[in-house]
Image (cartoon, rainbow, N blue to C red):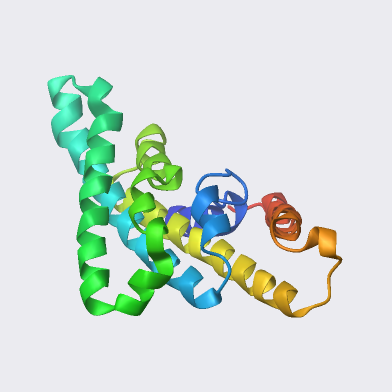
Length: 193
């Protein structure tokens, strides 16, 4: 049980995929202007990362390793991710057209989000079992969503405050992202177990 708690806390706070490992920066910066679209993107990424991690682990364990096809890992994982993103895009377009419009081009870009592929590869490298892999994928997604949501909230507040003209927009967003990353790095001093 302690192993799973450690995986959850570490993935969300200590080794946050965006703020510590710097994976998934494109959607982090692109979809973080409104908290509503940030939460929508977070939910979409959570779905894709969690399922992609489970499917990737199963394919690696039961297909690639037994057949000696480990060299196909990246290609196979990208195909799995692309399939899941297409499925998700169809579902969101039907169920939540407003969210589909808000996410725009960033929804299909989940396919190329290095955080999704990175998590799928990390669970293999860390030699997690299936349950640990799913917990890690879900926790990493929660960490991604948390970082995205906090950053969107900061950006919303910065839009209504008076800021120097030279810092408005992207410069202030990048400074805020750096400060948020430094804040999350403070969690790395916490010892678990």
